[in-house]
Length: 315
Image 1: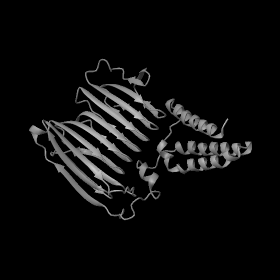
Image 2: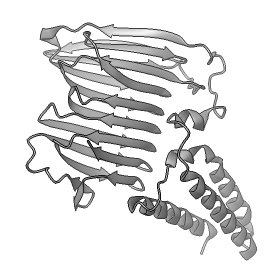
Image 3: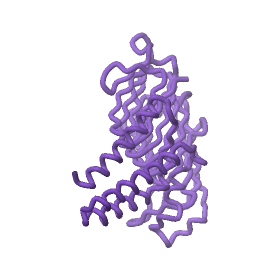
């Protein structure tokens, strides 16, 4: 059997074994604790290339031995809780610098606001996009929306469009053309939202963090489409139906839902870890709460991810 197939098989066994041990609560594995050790895979690939050419049993044994040692190291490190939640910052700090012309130590404060008009703000669509940014929701405002930005890179803008009785707000970060920078601190955005409208929140981002407590807001739909991200989202029960759609590449997703709502989860999660506390599996990739059929208010959850950690808890 070819060496590269053996090594890939060992890697898949490692990932599957860790996920299985997690699902049975044998271990608690923090995937974000091992991301900063990603050069390990370059070492493994280099050794595989070197010894695969010779096709000798000794070379194959060395390659497999190094792989096993490296995976054992990652297994040990993965069980150590991360020192802080800003794991994306830790991964890239000092390793990537695409924009050397920008002073990453300078921080500027930006304020954005859109007034609340009762008759024209019944339905609001909020589109949020940006990379290398931490997004937080910090309570309510008398305005329709307000945003306080601690900016280290890029340019931010808030744009409003009006269609019939629906307002569309677009909050976006725009980098310099042709440049992408991830700096030591990144950007931080603190939102405040008005509690009167019915909200649809669409987020699109690469690397970043999101911490939204939406339990006191009428949120019809929350959608997230991103890459390497850390999400901590809390939903409420102020509407009869709420949709939550999360599509990620490599992410740590924590979703909190109220016990008063009946919830259904449909997951297409590949090699991802799943922790759906208080849910019962009713079909392939489908999970429901015991009160799903009888509850007057329902939350429909859809997860789609490659190598992520998905956790749903009821409060």
